[in-house]
Amino acid sequence: MHEGTGPAALARLLRRHAGAQGRAQSSAPALARLASLARRHWLAVICVVIPGLLAGVYFAFVASDVYISESRFVVREPDKPAATGLGLILKGIGFSNSGDELMATREYILSRDALAALDRKGGFERAYRRPGVAWTDRFDPLGLSGTFEDLYDYYAGTVSVERDSTSGVAVLRVRAFTGADAARFNRRLLAMAERRVNAMNARGRSDLVRQGIAEVEVAKRRSLAAAQALGAYRDQRRVADPQQQGMVTLQLVSKLQDELVRSRTMLAQVRGLAPDNPQIPVLEQRVAMIAREIDREIASVAGSPASLAATSVEYQRLVLESEFADKQLAAAMTSLEQSRSEAARQQAYVETIAQPNLPDSPLEPRRLRGIVTVIVLGLVAWGIVHMVLAGLMEHRE
Image (tube, rainbow, N blue to C red; front, side, top):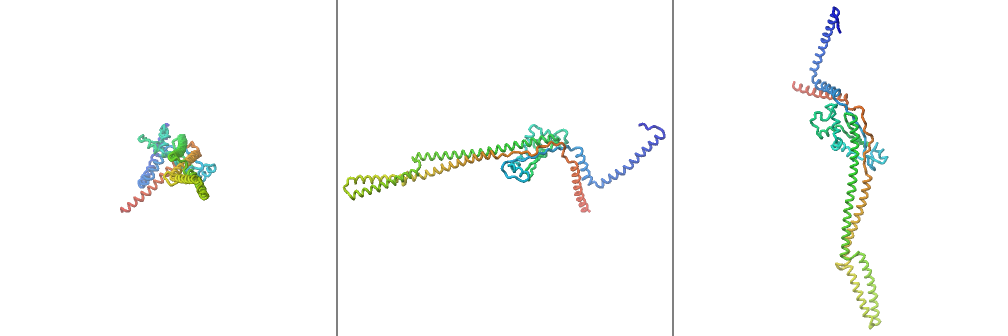
């Protein structure tokens, strides 16, 4: 704006120039006092003021917003004791938390396998290397360390699984620079965890049944070998059951002995009544024949290597082996059926209690808390260094 000419304009110009000189003269002592204060408290400036200013600049203008998607799930398995809280609710409907499977699921989510599956087409890496993300927050900002191990280290800071020891509920959190990415990765991790648990179930069922089948096959071979050995022994000795045959032979011997007694009695009566009776030689021959038959039958039962008594020892051993093998086979088949039933019954699975949310506002970084934390730590550092320096000065004096 044109200020005009003449005495009035000259007077305004002189007043403005005088005001500027006055403000300059008044600010100069303030800057001098501030500089003097900084020189006197240089340690506080280094430990507190500068870090606080840097933290303020970083959190205000540099740090990127972080969105967190959260989901809750449990791994349930029928017929196991439940815990308290939510575990009691699950027990009431016939299910309980499976701690081993839950921990295995947690370890899988945090594993390299899970990262490799999540980043199969590079989607995970691209999401954390977006151009709009602050270089201090993005993955491999300088492009110097983009290996899979570096990505896994970065992954460990973006995904966490925490288990509530009281309820047994696991909380899966995924951090990303957009809410959509956080929710998408959370859903994919949940699906991958469910597939992993299903694979563990299939593997457990397969191992359980396969072991039962192997035991049955071994028992079958033992039973068949024992039966073949028993049959070969029967063919070799020409005996079906030495014990039964021995019993039949002993009954026959008993009858022969009775007949022998009757024949001898008759022979004695005939000799007493008619010593010249022509039946006496016949009776003597009959008695002798019965006696020889008794001796032969008794010899077939015991008293010789080929007797039924000697045969019975080996026969009983083979019979016991065959019966034992048959019992083992029956037990193995029963165990196999139980294994199949157990495998069909015990199936753990992932039950999602809370689906992954789609965050509409960032939860991190907590800027004010970060700045305050830096200032507090600076004050602590300043106090420690100040005491150390004071001690050194006193020691020097």
